[in-house]
Length: 190
Image (cartoon, rainbow, N blue to C red):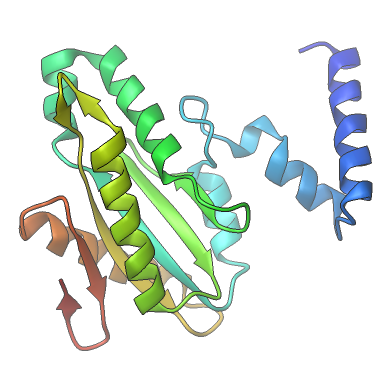
């Protein structure tokens, strides 16, 4: 990208930020325009951005989603089709502007719901699992995802919350895939 194009893009973003009353232009620009914050394939936020953002939050729910049998998709149809599936799943996971979708691994995504209870996040996760099943297919067969949900109620819990959501995701996979599991302090609930 040329310097002139970068400058134009930056100035347009500045005008939009001022119009929208952005509290911090740097945060706005990073969030909406900086290519270093985005996954190059799916254009959702990337893992480093996830790691930075999650540390700033206090109360939120985390949904981890993993494409079921993705290795089989790549092995059967090739990596070009696998890339199309990743882009389609990322598109199906997009929510509102306040909620964020991140690609945090090969076929793994995270959705962060700010100020959202575990119960409400489970409902959102159910909708997302259903949406992927209904919108993404290969050869007339649906692509499915499994999801794990966990809730953070205090600052500084990001590592624990990630582990809990990952454990719930693992439970969803073991329980038959194409489903949501929620981590509760005493157990993993299907």
